[in-house]
Length: 103
Image (cartoon, rainbow, N blue to C red):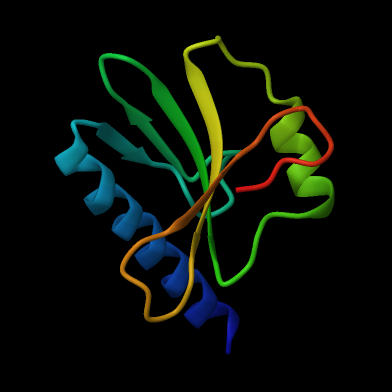
């Protein structure tokens, strides 16, 4: 898959994330394309979700460490959303400073 196709696939996954969250009462902003730590920021009256979106894999290595170290208020939840091919719902993991966080 070419770089152009990977970017398009990632952008589609980010938009899919927004379409998934908006009916749940979140107001979403997309900031993907390697422009910041978080691909989607979703705000509701109760919490803010900071989301890193991936296709068919989880965040790992240095990128995961950067997300863990990101400082945010207590009502913000850091998550990674993984959209696997041909699935209707994402797999979601919270990102914490702890070493072994799983679903």
